[in-house]
Image (tube, rainbow, N blue to C red; front, top):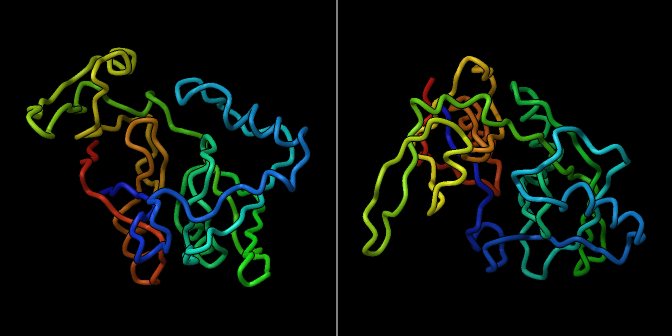
Length: 224
């Protein structure tokens, strides 16, 4: 069984009330050349045209904590960087990597805390290439639109990813069917459809170890 993994937006947990991010990129500490490289890899294009290879340059990040931010094991950040899923501290990373998680890359990250005049070096940026439509069995997957206000909830099925992508309004995933191309032994994977998923076993370990900054969601059923 898999659960969707999301970063927490609860102010009681993350401190800030923007519901989006706890730290923001300190652009002033980087050269214009380096910022251009970051933009060319992590921002250029859309989620439909993401590169399928790791960056060919040395990547590092430096962020600043917002005033009300509470430090959590998993941290949200701004701006968005394609395929960069979260900031994770060393303790949580050690736990995560004791499980079978998909291929990923870790980038050094510094978090400056202006209130306490310190720099935190115990976080890494977790980068993972997106698993694409080739792992999805569209004949068994179910999508939906509506379900809010006076708009009726309607289920949809599509023959392939292109048909789904071009449908309007853009559908959400309800039942994600994975085919034989998917490695069912993975405890964490990042899918183009649905986002980040973790196994029940990994969820239990995260909860038992008191890992903070996460929310678990069973709104998407994953089948094989």
